[in-house]
Image (cartoon, rainbow, N blue to C red; front, side):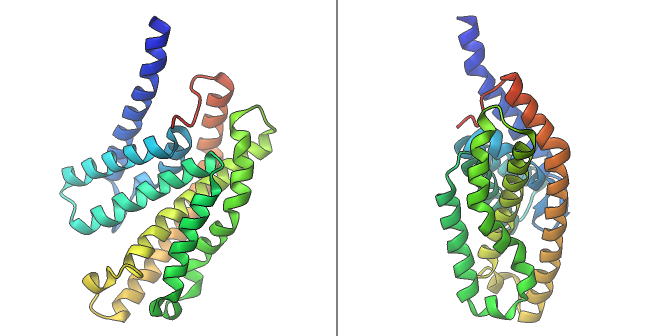
Length: 237
């Protein structure tokens, strides 16, 4: 009976820990509408799964922004982007690539058929296009996350999921800014939008490099340990 209770309470404790971590990391800004929690999203998605991952991201992101008194834009961009990023990691880890591919395709299509999608630099979207092409290979590799596998393939799966998840966050913010039309509220002229978009794109590429390093040095050894030790069976949802 005691073991059953412990088994049921363990996922609750893990979710609580990640929600608290999300609050702390989301309270530390990197640059406007971007907080350190972006580097936690892939791990949240892989461990917690899409449902519990979204719950954790929404809870942690909302609490942190309420505490620091963030503006409405931070809620719209931040909480939405973090939720999509976490959900993407969870879905790809479960091999459900069609949902992620459809979401990517919808947002990319909406961006490129918008007039500004042609006027803004293509290089700023290259990581989004590359991530879109890697969704299916990542989902195929991720099936090996849940059993004993060859180390290099396990590492590759973690790297790909982390990259796709982080880029999904960026793409969601771009979708809100351009196709949804938030730029009309934030920027009075195309020149101002262009400058903000280019600076944000440069920051996204830096995030891609950081998440690559984190996935190799932190996520991979942690997830490999959890998978082999059987402490928890992930994803939890």
